[in-house]
Image 1 (cartoon, one colour):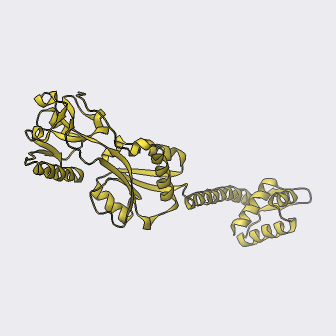
Image 2 (image 1 turned 180 degrees about the vertical axis):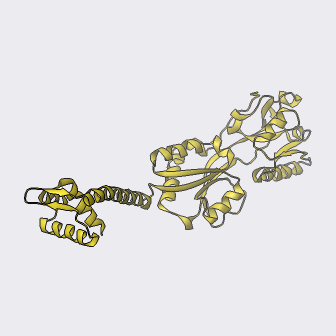
Image 3 (image 1 turned 120 degrees about the horizontal axis):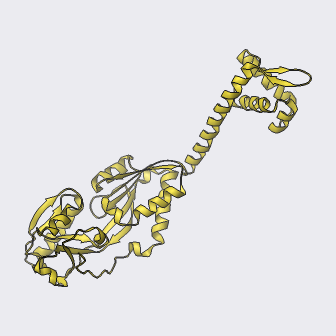
Length: 311
């Protein structure tokens, strides 16, 4: 029994008139009759009672009509879904991101994408840069949002989608909080609080190089693993750290934010993808994100924020 025959049967079962059913199917009546007869012979049952006056469904015909409607509905739904997947309007999309991406336009753009592509099932993963790069290479993640300038992105394509300046976070109770701009000598008096993640390790190397060039020592203080723990240690008076200016709204009480006499490289978030694992859906997401970021020049401009004591 073929799907075409099932459609012929369903139409006739609903019309209960060979002429009307043939017209609705855009075929002649004889071919319709032959297809129905072929179905009955194939199934070994009578589906219709035919008289000169009317056509009626048999018990077997009523049962098959119920099943035919369900089968054809499933097939139509599958066809629509497959066509949507073929042009990137449906399917599964795995997107990973570093936690700091939440302070960028990332949440809003992803939300807009989900609303514009309602048939796409988007899964989001909060993961570090190292894990994301490997996952995107292997294909378990389609797109990643990572800290740039950390690892070799060989084989992957990328685009900077967010850039932020940095400043020093020191205890608000410390005498240095009275100054507008902090020098390296000022900061050499306090321990540097840092995370064990890849980005902070890179930042530590940068700071050590800068301090060393000035014949000063960067004193390493407490190290932490959980997000935002460093700010808590700073507020408790245990040292200082560097934060991104777009994270100012998340710091706790007891912290003063200060400009530095030196200019550190900006914090950058890059969108990465594997060109060897492209699909229409992945391409749609990348194009969508590029379009939104491209229309927001401030998103890629390093801000000229004046830092003051805010807490």
